Length: 204
Ligand code: TMP
Picture (tube, rainbow, N blue to C red):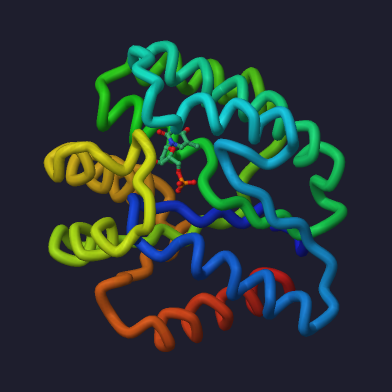
């Protein structure tokens, strides 16, 4: 694997992925290791515009429109990824697995269609490693309640998030050496240590 891999942080709402990606970015900054940190949907200014549209509480797109909007956001974001691919470590808060987990496992959109679109957009770009953050229902509910504001994707039934999380786990089991599961119901400090020691091994 490249010493400047794409490292993705995945997981459902409240699973701690955004916290952990920030910790890793700070850790790399302290070590003066150049990297970029982006998110999906979002990343570059155009995809941030699409993010606002998808997640706005007043939006009520159907599942296919959502899929195409997530892909549109990725299509814009991929330009940054291409620019730095194999040149800098790229940290991404959600990527292609989120589309399969949410739009296919959660919403029932055809898997082949999603895979075809992902392949078309990514071409030779490959994810190096994924941290999959897992959370139980009790903590998920608690963490969503603590949020100051909820977007359109924070308001699904618990059964939806269960399906999505199972989807993520299923994906991780297909390529076990490329995933690390992080149990975010456990102590955050221990998880941080686990993640940072894996990061060290990935980039050495
Ligand atoms: P975030 O608030 O964690 O950034 O995530 C935004 C929401 O978008 C989250 O509920 C997951 C969802 N999402 C999809 O449904 N499909 C996708 O392809 C991506 C990237 C995100």
